Image (cartoon, rainbow, N blue to C red):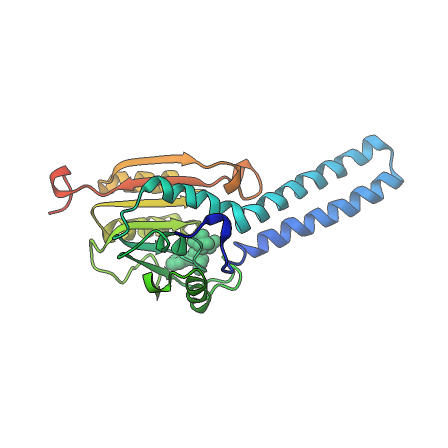
Length: 253
Ligand SMILES: C[S@@+](CC[C@H](N)C(=O)[O-])C[C@H]1O[C@@H](n2cnc3c(N)ncnc32)[C@H](O)[C@@H]1O
């Protein structure tokens, strides 16, 4: 098993333009504060300082989450799942493999398939080669498979996977009805009795409603803590878990 605190691969930065924006605003508001403090009375300079602190905290939080926090949170999520090791798993929007390699590290005879369209806007240095390199560095390349595919039209037969995961990927799809298509696809390729685990921001309530409509069981949402905030609590990550019913539970024939 890979220790989440000891990742050796290079996993880039999520939404790098957001991090650059936060960092730029921190620098600008810092400069503004320094100038205002020299030229203005204290009460007029204080709002500049407030903005500086605000942007500094947002930058720090985003940086921490993308470089470390999300890895630690996923270790906890996967620990709680108690995988057997023989699962066939899918990571929808695997990027450079942060979650993919963590799942692979818990498999023995199982395999994990990662699919992505490799958007470098959504993750810096995003590429098929980058995830394969990370899988090799983490020593799990024998359990990893990669495909270039859009999660709205997954190239797999129904009921292929015991476990479907996705981290911070589905919200990148627009409009909302297309995000629902990704949820439908994830559910379709899950085996009866299999599990779906999604960490995302924004529309997780709509994903949960869609899963319930599809007949998923045990659909639960849980806001994750500060380690998975993208700047502040308003951009917290929510964990969505569900399972696909077996035939005897009313699932597909
Ligand atoms: C913020 S990154 C997260 C990557 C990875 N799950 C992680 O946690 O490090 C979002 C990923 O979703 C992928 N993505 C966006 N839209 C997609 C789509 N329609 N189908 C497959 N992947 C998609 C992007 O290319 C990117 O790799």
